[in-house]
Length: 140
Image 1 (cartoon, helix red, strand yellow):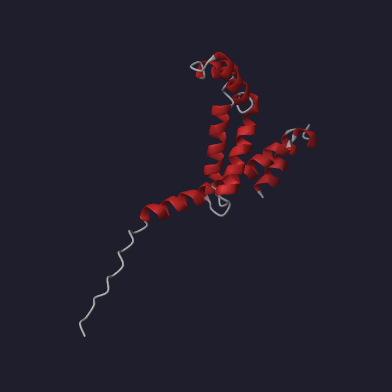
Image 2 (cartoon, rainbow, N blue to C red; image 1 turned 60 degrees about the horizontal axis):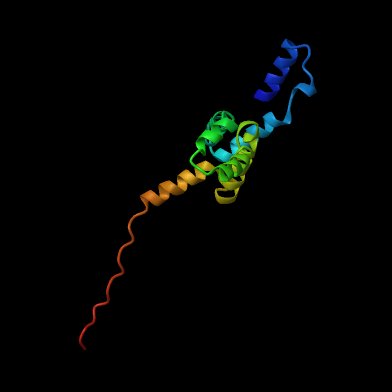
């Protein structure tokens, strides 16, 4: 409903509103946010949106010079190799990092981050298991 309202208001306010201005990545990002956070909850998509936007700000801000400084402790040939690999996942290629994160979440936490938080909560609240009762032998 809100998407339809937003689209109709965009068409009214902008006479050049056309399909070529809308990119599929925007709707795809919303789906990723929902799946990443947890589709069956209210807070999950909000949490997913926060995680994706935070990751975008962090990973897109790195560049090759930052990576060179980060890995400056390595010997030159190894540093160049590590920087060339890491450069694929940051800056303009931060979507690759998002894809890897999405795959890991789908594989290990099919219910999203909210499922992971629920698992963690159950693990913390789990009572210690009682020791098995010993059998008392009677003479007889």
